[in-house]
Length: 311
Image 1 (cartoon, one colour):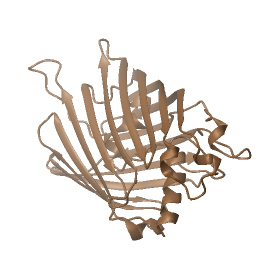
Image 2: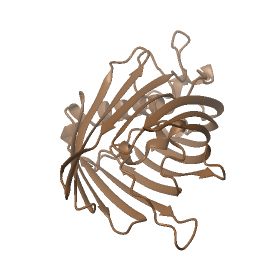
Image 3: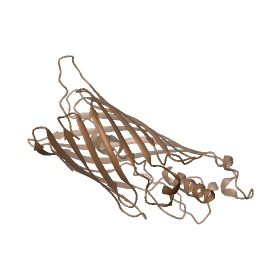
Image 4: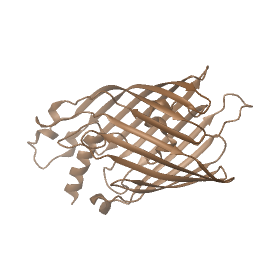
């Protein structure tokens, strides 16, 4: 059982780092609280908080399983001067067993304001540094060439997205990585296809006012990648008295999740989510996944009020 789990983690490590090894899967980092961290999916999201907004997110996946994925991200974005232009920055670190992936992405968004909402077009440019210490795995077969060398790869990339939002509705479409980088063939077999595949993300949500003190916000995230099953995230968050968010989420073929966010001040939002042990064989050896999110929105002037943003 342990050897089977280790092999699964090795394969997942390649996939998350941007590879396909005779199979295909979701390669982008996964977030449960994506609706509060939109820049991670779409560069056109930059500036949508109408202030300098900074977000920290920590994810510990499959708690209790040695070598399981962990993710840390920091992002910030803000409109600049004439407000039609917005800039953003995202730093990300993924680790699975001996696989490490470090990424830096800069975002540029141009926004068109209408009577009903804002239409934003975004571009993203950055790079990923991929490191795999394969020689540390100590395979049973020492002649296995797959584990005979360590791998270090620098992969530049760029992406694009579009995002439309009002006070009560949003919809976005993005392709964060347009270049299908491939890795050194020395770590894979000749007939395999190891590359970064394009991921397509469609997001949408709406805010319903159930009463003066209660609001309901359903969201969806549709993920499409070549050769992998379409993945759908559906969730609903309820906001009580503009302070407490409570939510539930369902991820197709994987998890049920519970979420809570607290608006501690007009500027500070903290959130936590718990993914119940998933429906795959890994549920036998882990106790679920944890995710912590912290968002702070800076005032540009002491007398300026930060306008509440629900997306």
